[in-house]
Length: 72
Image (cartoon, rainbow, N blue to C red; front, side, top):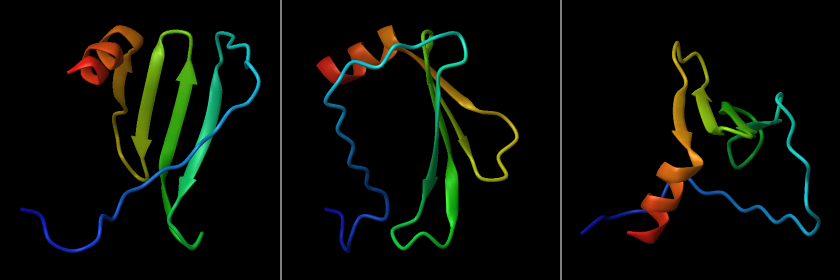
């Protein structure tokens, strides 16, 4: 059983549809107090890419992989 508080959390809500082009939407993620940059999430037509701060290669996940993960 894990102990302590989780160090990663996210809350997001989009009320209206957002059109995605080839370039996608780029979101810079900061820590809870806005002092340390955690990384960048790029949401595009092909899926989601996560590039942690000072990380060489991004982690890529397609929408199909995300759906399989969410379904269990």
